[in-house]
Length: 490
Image (tube, rainbow, N blue to C red; front, top):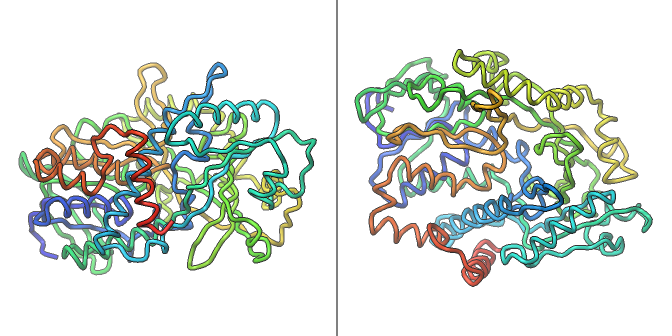
């Protein structure tokens, strides 16, 4: 890597976001000179790694936190948006598969039916209201709903077999759900970039600062962690997609749009089944409701996963607290992130989220048996010896300025951009990976509007993502759903 070189785009971070952004940009203009920098020894080791995320193709088919209820009315607006974004991602992967660029899609995407399951009359009423809203919308019209225990025993016997008809519960299901291994997908996308577009990832490269160079360019200061050499690289555009590490880097960039942003780190753990006989009995993703007052990221689920070439069974997530912003980060990350301009945001978010602090303290204090007690709300007779505690990834929830509360804790993802689109940065967490294509199209709109707005660009994007800038009718939705199902071997 030369010490002085001009790039059209430098992507910081070797995860699903940088891979998606770089590949779409190259498909639109193969002449773009793109560099990808990763701090670790290979790609997809943080948020994109299979053990570090939920692995759900987040399409709002089963996640109840995307359907809030207010005054007895359930809104499915957010669910519609997230469902569309996931289908856009599937269209992108289908395009790559049809072109012969992405091989063996069954290595990263698998059909696993998505279920929602609740206990108690109030929750049953909510789930029925959600079902009634969803069944009338063409994106969810295949949804099924039941209060019948015999039907639940068909859907998820591991949960339902030890229950009686007297228990008040209900479930819904959508057949087209998927299980994702974003680690393998990310590796495949970077392989396409390297072999087809001569765009390799440079590992062991830590970006230490990003400074304005001229009106159009940015100087990216890089340190090679193996040789300890330092480089200055020039780029017209820089994308910061370093997971939890993005905030610390954004704070060094001289743009006013960064002001007031802070971050709240949350670590995670799973209970992972080690008993093959139990694993065989469950082939489903089953999401329930977060506890009263618990944050949406705490939504418990019992999931079939495919990781390291094996079928797995996982329950969680359990939250923890670590001051690190990355799994391979520093214990000083949180303290380094506190700046003069974000102190009001941080204090406001803390004060207005005392229940979250209490929740995290309780989670950190949990023993394995406490975690097993949570699992037994799903599986009544779960045995501790059949389950191991496995550490999951590290997330940083966004804190941003709020004129009423000083600061607000945000769940989800957000793109921060300089006015000219020269710098873009992705902050936040779930449902990130599932919606990567939509989010990165938003980045391209800011950074390379000329690629999007040209006649060739519009035609190419229509080919890559048929839903892009299009009114989605039932006919178009069903047609594209059928095509991606066939292409991705679902």
